[in-house]
Figure 1: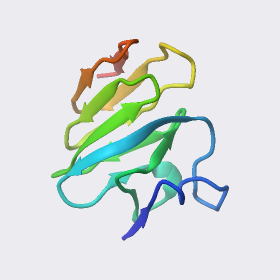
Figure 2 (figure 1 turned 90 degrees about the horizontal axis):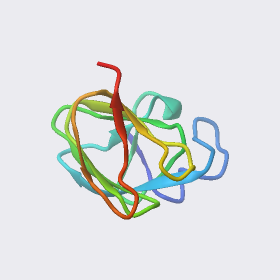
Figure 3 (figure 1 turned 180 degrees about the vertical axis):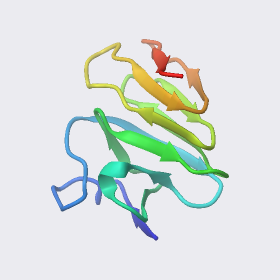
Figure 4 (figure 1 turned 180 degrees about the horizontal axis):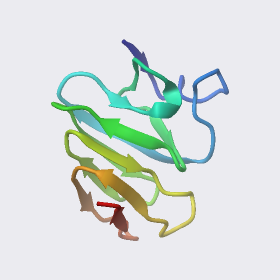
Length: 116
């Protein structure tokens, strides 16, 4: 199991995500870290890691996460959830693929869209 820190998620190394930074992982509750298909099997993002526009993130069973979007909105992601982060445009929606989130809105409330 490999964890990437805030600094390690940037820099253009193979398997890393590029693009505008749109969020930071504030808290993780449970064991492990956030998964992202873009990072590959067995690589997880830990507290303080930056997340990028369009990045897909997954909370495995037993893990909950709190994200801070750049506009100040906080998103609490429940276990066994998957979402796609918004583009860097103001008011861009978060796409909830599966699971559940709780949004604590900042100045610009986040739109949550589910395909289920």
